[in-house]
Amino acid sequence: MNKQRLSALWVTGTLAFALLSMLVPLPGVLQPFKPYWPALVLIYWALESTDRVSLGLAFIVGLCADLLDGLLLGEQALRLCAIVFIVLRFRSRLRFFPMWQQTLAVLALLLNDRVLLLVVRVFAGDSLPPATWWMSPFVGAALWPFIFLLLDDLRMRLRIQQQ
Amino acid sequence: MALTREDNSPLFAGSVAGTLRLIFYLALAMVLMVLDHRNGWIWHIRYSMSVIVEPVYKLAGLPAAGMRTLSVAFADRKLLTEQNQRLREDLLLANAKLNRMAAVAEQNQRLKELLDTQHSLELNVQLARVIGVDVGNSQQRLVVNLGARDGIKQGQVVIDSHGVIGQIVQVLPTTAIVMLVTDPNHAIPVMIERTGLRTVAYGSREGDQLSLPNVPLAADVRQGDKLLSSGLGGRFPPGFPVGEILSIGQSQSGLFLEARARPTADIDRSDDVLILHDQAEPDGPPAPATPMGPPASLAPPPDPTPAAPASVAPRPAAGASVVRP
Image (tube, rainbow over all chains, first blue to last red; front, side, top):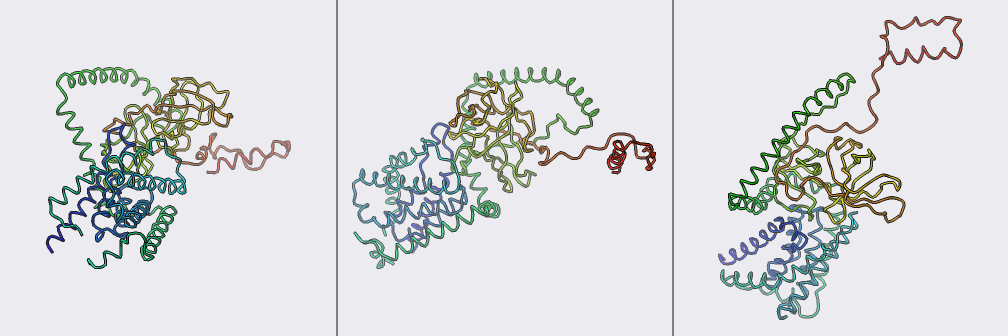
């Protein structure tokens, strides 16, 4: 029971940290390359522990993200729901992919996410973003193996059993 | 719990329930977005949740603040001495200029009193610190550490020592969000200092420049021209430096010249900004001019002489209507 609570706390903690790091600005030049942290962490947890990650959780995390840093309420909720749905649908296959294939899958997910964001923004009446705006998914995918290994290692150390 | 797990992740086929749930959540998100787009709820919610939101902003601003502190702590003595020296020189220069300006300002004040206008050259400002947080998924917003409790209102103009930075777009109890002049959704009415040509400067799409897309073809605009805020539109007070023209080219339609300008304010590097408290003149037509002329007691008696020609007859009536207030 205690262990379960610890692991729930750990999942919440990493998600909160991801939301926080979404707000932290990078120094000037690197700014457009900032990856979409909440999506990466949610993908990890969707792959590793389906019991906790559901569409509802993705929706709530998205609403929190919108509340902190968003132009429209529900925009990130929509994007994160779409990501988590795809990951959960293909979870069994994604988990047994070698790392490079998984990275490519994550890249596709993040690109899909950017397209969704672009559609929402255009409907909301914003102007088209510059070309560097499309770099963020590539940075996110390049960081994926490290994030995966780091989170996996921390999970092993905390002995949170896989569920 | 563990028993239902297999249903959620079948190897090849998806479950109908999952798809339905997805459709439900997507529809919910879309309804929220449309409602928010129509009514602007997000800021009301953010305002009422400010107990949670603002500490998170402050927390997320800590790394930037830490970097700032570290850069001061580890800056070597020589650098600081040089900076100090440079600041002293600047101050000396500014004071000298100010002394010379003081006489002119006083003269200006007297002349303006003669003209009975209310414009003043004095600035009523509040110093604010920038919190290093990324809001609204773009670089074109700043968060400052003053808010509704400090008397900040939406629409106030934010400047630094070099020029206009932007304007307050949203206010939370102890923080406020500034939209920069370089935001693609921002426009500021400007005037070219050298020629007095009035136009509008928009934020550029790339986000670090200003774009002036409708300069007339025949206009005299050169590289290096300074842009001042023109005060039209009633949001930005006139006379603040906004930018400097970098380049001029044809616009896409070919009907106008399109100029690019660099904002004069240190948008990327300012840690402290000033928030102007004097709001510009309100929108709309100017207030009716106060009547001039002799007081009503000196007005001619209402009955005109019967000998007056017909063409002159309306004039006393018009004069009387002006004097009445």
